[in-house]
Length: 448
Length: 175
Image (spheres, each protein chain N blue to C red):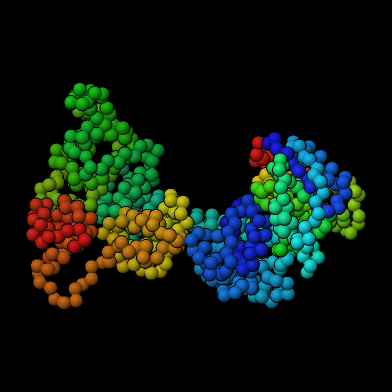
């Protein structure tokens, strides 16, 4: 079965548009029409077409001009020129300008069939090329981690190296840099790859629940424990345990985990029978754990246990060269998910994305592209589609008081953290109550 | 499908050709086909520059007539037909529509200029009618050479295709 194409007939004569439309629909193709070059460009801007039949002689923008613009802006779109008898010179010009073929009207039905056959062959070559390109794209990706900047190249090499050992790994990096993806990549490349990968977000679980989740519990060991349940440390058996936000776990849990790491034995809650466990530990944190040790909130012995190998992930600010690659990937992902055809981005939008600070890193970029794709009314994203991104704070033009600098810094951190008080207070190095007081005293609010 | 198909001659058309077409529709689509009284050729469809009949206009003119009791109608004409982009057409139908038209004009000659037997001409006419009727049943052109929905741009291609639908197209036929 020949593939079905999305085609457009561009001709100022209604009768030609209708008869060709009727004919091409008999092949099951999705066919659209446009009465002028500008109408055709508007439609291509909305959704991609694989093939255009373009009449060379049209008022306003003629077929040759349309061909040139299409070939410049949408090089993947094939164009067949339709020309009146006797204008062979313009047909030759069209072929030089990138037309795939031409038809001199009126033509025999089998001439059109022949042209379509040639188009299918060209399409096949294009799709083969895309397949090869897809294979090359894989080279710029490493287990779903995208980037080809020098810091990422170093990271890929480190992942491969680390994966072969069984030592505990601590992954550090700002929020949204892809710590879990790196953990998964290490697991996937390790000898434990066929065994489970279990991820737990320590920041999201209260202490008691975390204990039960990790160690399991016996029936009746606490109120509500109606059945015995194995903990993740047992379930992960032979695989990799990923503890995200390990800087958020309590002192007691640090002691419990330290014991497990040393003895490789656990006791489920309410049980006195030891169970042997075997897993590789990968932890991650956005916190400065050495500072936490100094402050007394993190145990030094536990830190050295989980930190045999440390991998620091670069922030998106440190690898802005990867932004176009990431944008392409997220556009394709969300175009597929939303079944919208958004596959292009204008240079002004890319400059805006490059200028932005990305406090939320790749995750923030992904969310921004998703939002832009969902709301976009055309197939090309431009700067307006990213107008919701606040530009990086510029240096003030006039000298400022210390108080003004302090206030604008607090506001910036609050905005960057989406007004999450705990996280903002942590970054500012003050406690939550103080931050609340500052917000109240200065009448700060979201959007100030 | 229990509906009736109408086969209507436009102007003078050999009766035997009409009978062969109706018989083949019944044989291959398992539908009763009635031969309707001859209708005059709408002269508004005649193109003085090309000295041919515009198939689109002919279909529009037929569409204005009342074919009560027939859910699909196949018109048969002995004159040469075209649509604006093509030099000629053997047949014309609107995809999923109710009216199709076939022309016998170019079936009376072989590719090498020789004259075919009358039975071969009728065979070709029946194949075009079955093909255009397929479009009325919303079947698309088929890649399978052993299928009546395979597109035949030249007379020798028409000789090669069978009368029947391939298995895929037969499955797509509305029941």
